[in-house]
Image 1 (cartoon, one colour):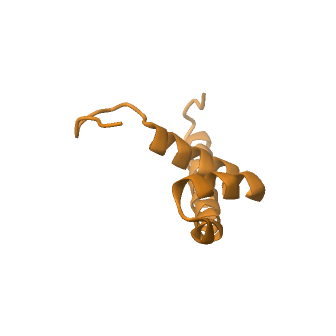
Image 2 (image 1 turned 90 degrees about the horizontal axis):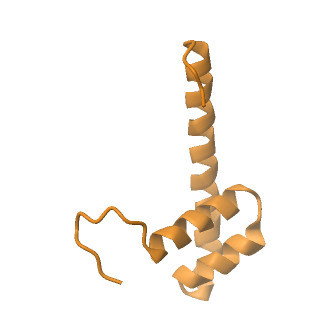
Length: 78
């Protein structure tokens, strides 16, 4: 699939990558490994799944911190 450089749509590769990070961060290593094999060679999949877990957990921590800061400042959280 080819897109323009400024295209805002979410492609299949990006969707697969987002699902990999989500599954790994939610503690589902088998599904994360399965998704990782769609993106890289089978021998690299465990490394990618571990990195995806780290990235997903970091994103979760950042999200929780921003929610906590919003509540502390008295802003509305939706």
